Length: 130
Image 1: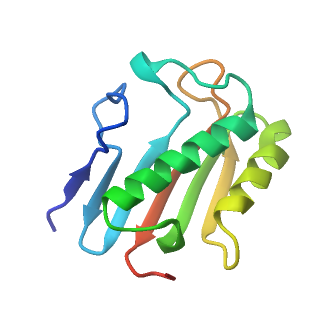
Image 2: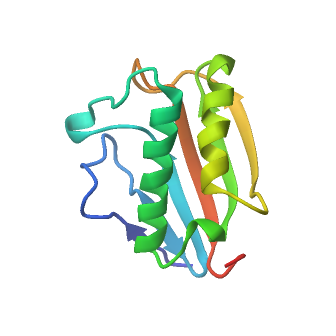
């Protein structure tokens, strides 16, 4: 099945060869999203809450560019650099997914740049819950 790359114009150029998201049929895949600014600068270094909010806003924008909403998210892949960031990430995450929650996993791992503490990738299905 062919897919359509989704690259919202307000986003900085990706730091690697990928699209912010892709749409294949009624499914939207959002790449692992980080709190990065222009030129790949780290935004909100070591602040899990601020990075999570920035990431989820970027995911929302990508989904909307593909014709989806946060209510269509069926699965999230969450990566954190330390379990000490888990509560702060979850507090912000809960604001973006009220009511029925998408499936997810969360693992601890290293991320691509120092100061980054959260990364989230999403899968949405158009018309999933909305």
